[in-house]
Length: 65
Image (cartoon, rainbow, N blue to C red; front, side, top):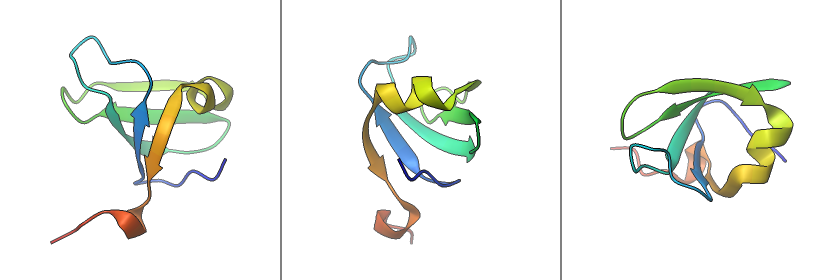
């Protein structure tokens, strides 16, 4: 799966704060993500994150004003 820093992912399950949109901050064997609802940052192995992803919004498809 092609993931880049700055992409926004939507996960299958919600975070305890209620949000399910995350921003990718670091990409490698481990991936650091930040919840866009509460701001919490977590780092998980790439395999776990790839299983949890529902959709990916790349930088190119995001509307930036």
